[in-house]
Length: 270
Image 1 (cartoon, rainbow, N blue to C red):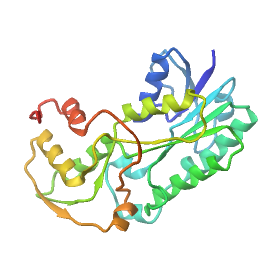
Image 2: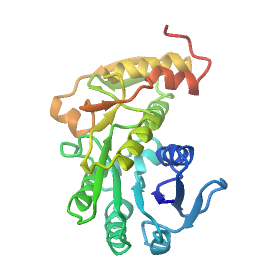
Image 3: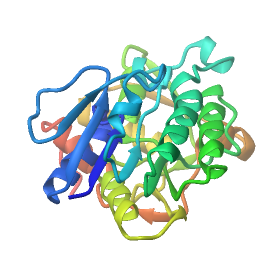
């Protein structure tokens, strides 16, 4: 049976991808710095940032799903001044380039790369790092696919949680449509095994709302009472910050559904 290697398989999206591969009866190998506990997958220890263990991890692999990334903002759940000046590239650029090279040597049949919607207009260094990594894939001689996704609900949750201590929340009014990792994982698996290649349809959430509406729903779920100060942004500035509405596939899980699952005491919006 063909073997699929998943990088970033212990992250939020990666876990959902691995779950679906296993559910579909596929052989799965997860590349991670530390092997996990689940016994229904193979584990390959290594580090994409250094290349350690990568050649061995690709042995007998047919398909690679590259879901690995390193975002300091996502890891800490908030933005710091340094994030406007630099972002590490060892995983997303050098790591992707190294992975592509070794995949070429290993005769991988399909390389699927997970990326982000709207990178060309985004100005944050992390977005530019992601774009540089994506360009490495596009220039590769491999048989490749790229799936761009909107920011994930769990990241929006982290962002809004970081505001909880403030009595007034300054929130942009610009619309966007974040998405759940479960919907992205479903789309990624479709694109990995349907035989098509190249830049695939991007995926976003089912609702395009402004961030004020998302924040109010979040406050309702958390039973928080904070004043929201709407902040208007120009279209260029909003796009620069990653606030766009995706054009392509729409996920099914709404933000309120995600909140209901993660904060089950929230008031029903039905």
